[in-house]
Structure formats: structure tokens, C-alpha cells
Image (tube, rainbow, N blue to C red; front, side, top):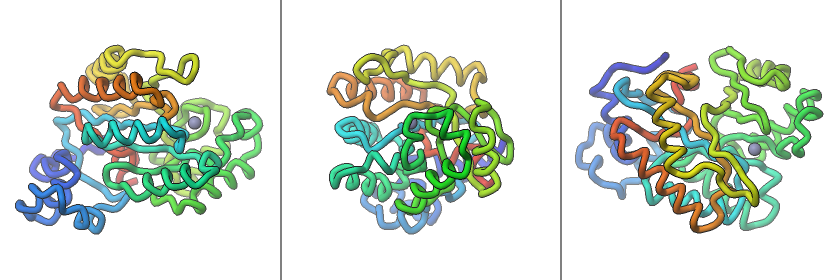
Length: 276
Ligand SMILES: [Zn+2]
């Protein structure tokens, strides 16, 4: 674990995103000013290292396949209302019209609350075995996404595979092993997940908000996660396109926030990604 025990500094990092920037500057007045967003953008860049607090439990909300309106728009609204950070693993080919392109631009420009990361250009055309059996074309697919949208961090989620590349260690599903090795050699981290809010019929969430919150809290309490005191949650924007499911997402976050030791972070601050 790379959790830093410098509580005094960490107290800055787990406060609101604006307070974090202000702490870095040592400016208490600015810490109270949520309007000082220009300072945030100049201080905290995607991929910069922050101090994690060893007394906290970190939740990494990672939502895949954006842009997928109206789901992406609803998810963004809920996360903003709740004041939580999240990561969007985006797919270039899903941005096939101006509206969807604008959504990706918004995601790209919303750091430090939201981080846009790489989920490939084609999503493997949903032919996962073929995709991972051809590492050269798979690499090209990820690089097309990376370069087209000038993605700021070298963090990838593989389409259809729960695999990890962290600090040179490859784990998870074996099918994409060669692709993982190639990405590792290029300096990329690959992020799997500890818990999924699964998709049911008609692109709706399977689990209730209560069931999800209980699962997250139980796994954190029992140490049943990839990294101690950190949990990566996967879901998909399209599951939250209808108002009742957007409400369910808000309820899920509200339930998690009842535990005041829980903090929400973007995946560039995952313990095994930071400072690699
Ligand atoms: Zn996906």
C-alpha cells in the first residue's frame, strides 16, 4: 500500500475539491471559496499525486462507455449535486454526433471533479476474443482514443474484461494478457473493478441502491478489495437514463456518505496508480 500517513497534509486532500486546491496554496480564505475554480485548474492536473488519508476509505466511482445520453447527462448531474468525484471511461466511437462529442468535451474539461479516461475507440466492437487475440490492432484502438481526445492520463479500462495492470503486476482475466503486457510496456495502468452495479433487462440497474451500498460497505470492512481501504465500483451511464434510476444513483451515494470515513476520488488517485 502506498497510503501516506501524513494526516495534516491528507486533511487537505480529502476535503472538497476546492478546499484541496486551497490547501496546496496554503490559503485558508480560498479554501472557503468554491468560486476559486481557476486556481484548481492551475494547481491540480489529471494524474497529479495527492496525499491519501490512512483513516479514510476511498470509493472510486468508474462509469463506462460514455457518451451515452441521456444516461451520461443524468449521472453527471447526480454526481455534481452530490459533490462527488468520479471517472468516466469513455469510448470514442460512441461520440458519433455533435451532442455526444460535446459530452466528451465536458468530461475532459471537468477535472478535478471528473476524470476522463480511455475505454478504447471501438469497444472491441463487442467481439472481445477476436480483439484481444490481435494485440497490434487492439493497441491501435486504444491509441486512437488516447490521441483523438488528448486524454491526460495513461489509465485504461479494457472493454469486457476485469483485468488489472498496476505497478508492473498483471492480474485478472487471462484473455487480454498480451494486450496488458503491451500496455504495461507503454506505461499504462489498467483498471478492473471490485464491485459492479450490474445491467439488467432494458439497460436498467439490477441491484437496488441499498443493496449496492451494503455491498460496498461490507467489502471495504472485510478487506475484500484489490487495494486496502479502496474500492473500485463499475457501472454504465446507460443504466441511469430514466429518472427513477438516476434517483437510485443519488440514493446510493447518499447512503455511502452516511459513513463519514468514506471519500470519493478519481481513479488517477487510486493507491496503486499514484506515484508509479
Ligand atoms: Zn465498456
